[in-house]
Image (tube, rainbow, N blue to C red; front, top):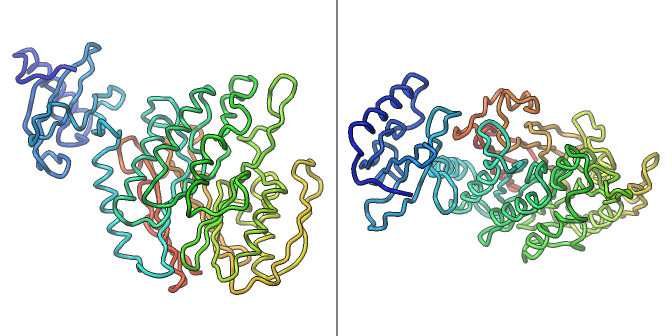
Length: 464
């Protein structure tokens, strides 16, 4: 990278004026520093909306490919290395948002999240049995420089969501699955999971790592008609050790993605709706496409039952990627979604009995005994999930189901974009690019408050 102490003369000035005219004619400038299109150095500050309103040196330079770049360096340091950089994107007709050189995060998003966190703090009661849960889902990270759909932005969303920890607003956080899109080659997908895991893990707040139906990389296998690109249990080997090693996460075993977290009288229970057997034919192709097949098996049900049988005195919220039932009460995943809901209803009614599932493959047969008659002062109050790329809510048998929108960018022109996200008209570098939530569960006031940022409802309220 070469920096300039002054412009290179008349030619650069003419080129800069031409670019500025084109930008002005094409659209309203995305930010105040978009106008700096001439190679050179400039002194900028609060009027240009610099980070924290501080004084910076803005360096404009052009690389060998002819791409224009901007770099921000603090004026308070002798270090010439920039803190923030960005490039001009011809697809957008403007510079991208500034990103931190070390983290890739955008300072404009940090400022937005600071304001969001202050809003949450003003509306929640802090104290016993008031718990704030950060929710992120469906980031669909993939190896693509996309400006209107899934791509590198998925990893950035995870990193920027983690910034909420610095605001002091979170007691816990969860990613509800579909971390990656699963459409890249196997080795690339493995690297993507590692990057996502490392970006999400925290030593400030406990966290849940939940598996989604895209996290087996089956989308790549489907598109290329090849044998499985992931070895067996690859997601589990990469992601779950980091999840389960936390002292605050309790579990029966570490085999199925099930576990729980307690704070006060609230218990959060994590469920894996991508509990699909890894069976392969003689050509190495999977019998079950995990992207299209969601379900739970008998062993995971056994762990869920054990957790429930030892939940006296708790108010429980379940979390998974897929919603087990829909608003009509029908099963919303292929195998045993309705059975999970019925188990939770049986828990709330203090019943004793058994689960059985007929007319489905033997791998998903259920033969589970349960006895909730000795459980005291406990109830499942809500179920959180993603997967559908929409917001929704419905209450069935006293359990409040809450669905959260995808963080992944879904441009309005794409066939896969849901009608809900088309209404947001989502665009890169705009607030609508991402989506995330803070959910306040207040057992004393008997309510759940859902605060959304980005392409999400600003506020939803549910009675417990």
